Amino acid sequence: MSELLEGIQEARLPVPGRVFGARAARLDALAAGHPAAPFLALLARLARGQEAAVREVRCGARPEAARGARLEGGPEWRAMLRVVLGAVRGLTLPAPAREAIARLHAAGEPELESLAAGVLAGHTVDLATAPFVGAALQAQFTALAAGLDAAALPLAQAVCPACGFAPVAATVGGVDRLRYVTCGLCATEWHVPRVQCAVCRSTEQISYYEIADAPPGVKAEACGSCHAYLKVFDLQHLTGADPLADDAATLVLDVLLGEQGWRRVGRNLLAPVGEVDAARA
Image (tube, rainbow, N blue to C red; front, side, top):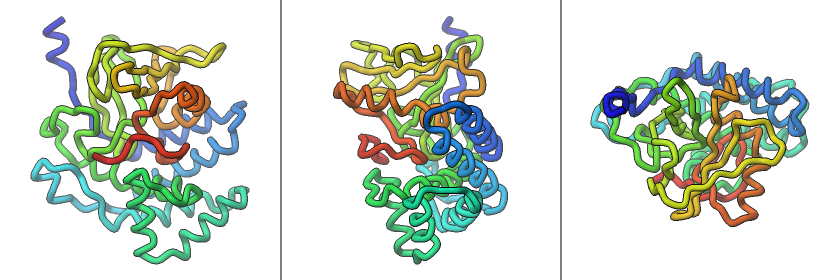
């Protein structure tokens, strides 16, 4: 077992086009027959926009990456936002979404940067624009993370070793049944042993919650020490699961856990569900 553990890849960097293409496909699949099908279909179009954005907008190398510091964003996200907004053109959207898109098209650089700062800090004041801004920021940070050296990243703790953002969810899979948590911003994955809190690393008072009568493979791992929870998607039961997409399709579990006093570890930038304890460290 010790030899097996020594071979674990501690961090896995994203391949941007693959991440967003697979996410869009997963969201389309999840939308079929889902009570929130229009919402998931919109997120699928956003993911297609992200896929186009990382292909069309080049993100230059960041000097902080060479120093081993956490990634910081730049102005490229605003160009990516235009691509993302173009991807939803022609969709039949509710009035708040249409108005949000119009505000983003009309916004100047200071207003856009203020919106981005709020999304990153978890202090969003305009929830209607947040998914579009979040999508563009994800595209930028995922592109930046792809250029890092995984072996040079620090061992991850409660936040992403590449950018310092909180995880959106985790997956368990492979022959060795390893668990990797996924950054909600740059899609970097890092290994956290199973039955261990992803926040405080406690192995005490760990419990699991799932939706009654739901298909297998979706659980929330809750820690009695820090009262936080993280969703875990089992790839053995959920072929093709994507942490962000499957999280968006299971928001009812967040509602149930919130009613019981649990706090969510991180945020889904495409599906903001109110204030959560996931501010960037």
